[in-house]
Every structure is written in C-alpha cells, then in structure tokens.
Length: 456
Ligand code: F0G
Image (cartoon, rainbow, N blue to C red; front, side, top):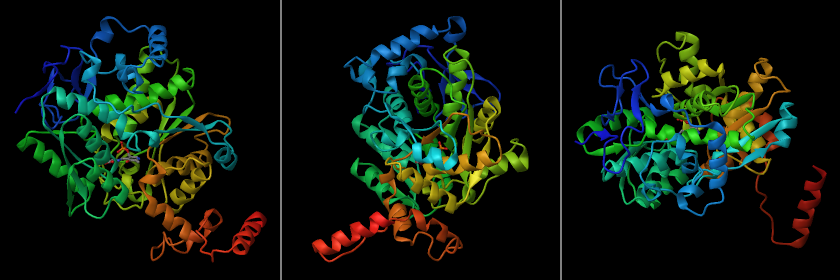
C-alpha cells in the first residue's frame, strides 16, 4: 500500500512534515492509520520552512485580503485563500473545493442581553456547503487523498463528517465509504451521504465502535481515512480561526468557545491560534474553551479525574448526537490546547443545551444541538467567573439548524424529553416553545391567532 507521502506526485517536496505529538519524531510520510511509527500517538503537520524564513505577517494579511477580489476558485474558497499556512499544492486546480469557509460572524444581541455579555458573537460554520464546519477540513484532506492516488476515502461519523466527506469525494471523482452508528445519527445527515453517492453502512454499534473498525480497515484495505485523526483535516479546520481573526481585524477576542466531541476542531483552532501568535499575526492568545454534553464528557473527566494525563472514556449518551462520542481520538491535542491558551473545559445538561439552542434560534440564525452547547457553556463559565461580562466572546456554531429537524420539532411540540428523566425539568423550557398551530382554514381563526400572539 502506498504511504501517504509528501513526495507523492503533485505535492511539493518538503513543504510540510508529519510530527508525532508525543515523541516529536518527524517524518515525510505517514502510515494509513496516521499514527507515529515509534510510539503510536497522533501526528500533526508542521512547516519546517517557517523556522528558516518566517512568512511576513503584514504581507500575509494583505495577500489574504486581496484574494477576496479574485475570481479563481481557489481564492474564492475561504480555506484555500489562507493556503500560505496550509500544505502546499503545485497548482490551484488540484484543490477539490465547493467554495467552503467564508462563513459569517454574527452579533447575538438577544443572547448578549440574556447572558449580560455585550460583545458576544457567533462564528457560524453551519453555513458551509454541506452545513457544518467539517467542510473546511474536508477540502484539504480530500485533495491530498486524491493527490496520494487513492480511489476510496472512508470515515466513521456521527453524521456531519460523512455528509461532508461524501460531497467532497463526489466532487473530486473519488468513491466514499461511510460507517455510522445505526439509528444514532439524524436523518438529514444520513440523507446527505446517500444523496452524494457514498456507500453507507449503518453499523450496530456507537461512533466509537465505528471509528475502531475504520482504523482496522485502513490497515487492510486501500482506503484513505478522512476522520479528524487525519492531520490534513485539522489543517483545513485551522482556517476557521484565521478567517475569524481577519473578521475581527486581527484583534484577538478574549474567549473562543467550541463544542467538544472527537476533539479535532478544538485541536485545529488551538493549532491555528498558536501558529498565528508565533508568526506575529496576533499579539496575544484568546482563551479557547471546550464544552461537552454531560452525557459525553470524556474530556471533562479526563481533566478532573486524571489531570489530563490519560483518557477517561465514557459510554456516551446525548440528544446532541453529533457529539455522542465517549472515546475522543484527539483528547491529547485538546488537553495541550487548553493548557497553551489557558482555556476551560465544562459540561452542560440536555435541558441547558435545548434552551440555548432555542435562544440561538430566536436570533434568526439557528444551529444544531451540538453547537448550542457553546452558549450553555458560556452561562456556566460566567457563573464561575472564568468569563467576565466585559470580555469579548466568540461562540463557534458548528452545524446548521437544518441538520437535526427532529430535535427542533420535538422541542417546540413539547415531546423532546417525554419519557426521559428530564421530563419534569423540561417544563422550564415552555417559554421558548413555539408549537405549530393547527386551525380551520378561515380568516377569523387566523386573525384570532394573530391577536393572541400579539398579547403574549
Ligand atoms: N459539532 C458538530 C455539529 C459536529 O458534527 C461535531 C463532530 C462536533 C461539534 C464536535 O467536533 O469532534 O471536532 O470535537 N462531529 C463528528 C462527525 C464527530 O462525525 O460528524 P469535534
């Protein structure tokens, strides 16, 4: 099986290397499981040339700004626009792109009032081509899969990775194999993978079981793994932070808050912050905090019970199915990022997630449940005094509202928590519920409804 080498055809030699995050071993190629040949830990991509000749920060900023005016597909991508800090391509035509990135930074005036944090913003990665932040990583990793000569790409997923991978594979003329936990992902994410032509296997296990199987599969079959263990994914996802800082005119916010599942995204954002700081693009590091669902809180427990030294796995259970992960692959990278940026790690309940999701929805932007953990987490961090009301806060919304309509409908109809231990506590969510109203098709009935709504 061919190694995933930087000397593969079409990739410029030695523009980047793989480095083991534990033993630091450097290599020009990586094995198919993207693990260090010496110690078995995860790899990251590093750019030795930056040491010899660090890119000029002011020049980078103006290059990236100027590319916004270009009509070239590679420049119109909000990921490849920042290609100076990504693994190098020989030509722009090599990139498999759907015009990803370029996502808005929204003010959240209502959530700002609710939390008492006036400078509160959302970076909405749910407005990517397939509706989640995964597209930023997938454009890079799928491109390098094709450059390395693979015909098949594969992933284990709670839904969004598979949707994204299937789309980029289809655009790049690759075949894709999806492993998802049977019955545990939202129908809309599953339908995306089907529509984009993936071979989709619903396995009778959870996400962690799917990922375990995938890691064995890539050692046996010539398929290229596109989970976030793949360091090219994280390089693409770094651009979320680059674009965010550009939108803030390179003035770092005090806090960035991100949901944590398999912990690839927090690792990618943390890597980007470190690199931006190192290259002089920003003058100080924002604190990056990771929020998990209480029922899928492996990182929280890893920090509290093991001081971040070993992974404490959990049997994950949450309605925020995107983060229903008990054995996060990138836990060590995430621990390093929390330490480097002095960030916090917290957990939130199912009720807190549902309320936060409704509050974000009421802003007119919406998100999927896993994204709403950020607002719920912010409330907790404020109570603890970790975030101060006068500080600036960015919530990273990772997925689109339309990713999980069952959750939203269940919430507004009032049956989301029926038959669960949260049923009675869920009464506190009533003020946010907007159930659909079934009426006779008469003008009177509609006018009466309008008048009642005006009073409420
Ligand atoms: N938010 C959403 C909407 C997600 O889909 C995921 C992960 C996360 C947050 C957590 O990000 O894993 O980088 O810590 N979804 C993966 C998937 C695992 O298969 O779609 P993470």
